[in-house]
Picture 1 (cartoon, helix red, strand yellow):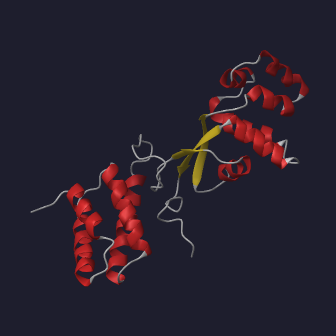
Picture 2 (cartoon, rainbow, N blue to C red; picture 1 turned 135 degrees about the horizontal axis):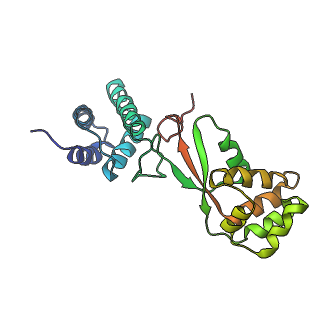
Picture 3 (cartoon, rainbow, N blue to C red; picture 1 turned 180 degrees about the vertical axis):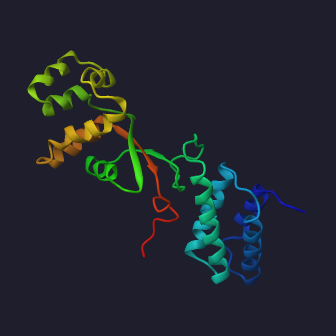
Length: 213
């Protein structure tokens, strides 16, 4: 009888951490069955991915390692084929799936130039300082007056002519003016609560394939 993806993952989860000979054989048999069923983007896929990560770190033998590597690559190919669609499993480290998070100014600036991902502004999240207060320290004199109206962050960016797709670049550039005072810069950037969306464009930008040689 053909078993479903969910039932096979449930079985794998119950045996994958055991290292007795019979359990190792059962794990290999289960992996061989799993590679024949279609993947689905749901919570079960995440459970399967986590099982594979454990088995990749602690393979019982070469056969198991080969099966695990093959399945991790299959998941990467599956998720790559779903690029551009709305995902139900964001921010969990799957290949080609975006994550929304917060980083320091220097880290965001580095990521913005990374060849294996695209980074965009998502929102101001849990801000403790508004953008007016920060831009008063960085804007040229002619534009600084725009901060006196105490507009909300998004409205201020609109008045300054910063298009939505350029907002992250603008924020990075403005805070870069404070590079000579890194502690102050980091405190201001953190207080703004800049959340970014990091979208991998390469499988290496993921939990499974971000490995040391």
